[in-house]
Image 1 (cartoon, rainbow, N blue to C red):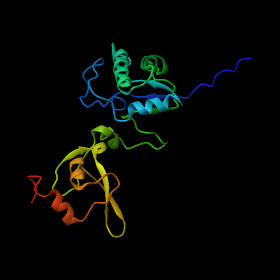
Image 2 (image 1 turned 60 degrees about the horizontal axis):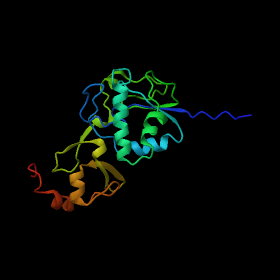
Image 3 (image 1 turned 60 degrees about the vertical axis):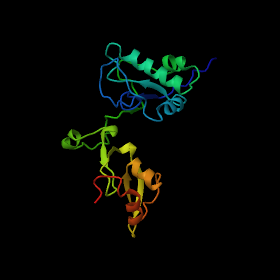
Length: 200
């Protein structure tokens, strides 16, 4: 008697803004000009060990959309040194044309429904992760950067700490990395002052 292989749960991945960085915006269903989101390929390689991975996008139902996504992913897989990249893209990964019955979905334009209806105004103000910008918190810097480009450091307020984000340029000038504590005012001023026309 042959055992029936256990079916893996389905993980559904959106494409633009999840795998494809989508920095250039929409150029057509079969035009995919931008690099992957950092870590995308490593995630896919791990995910297929545990899930049947389906890539489903607004491109999926449009002429040339699936083929363009496959060609793009094949190039990314080759660049990442994935063995048997063609089999990985065309056989291991699934490319449905309808929304699959997924156990879980990763999408940059979705909100998890937890049983409580969100405020409509909050939905109208929704922004995907790669469109959210913040200003560097260094006083003399006016850089507006995407949240995923911020270096998250913290400031000691005496009775606790306060997390804040600074731009990579300021972090480099101060020799900071994620999780570090922001040095004192005079140290910051000495490192940054004079490098920005907004400096007082």
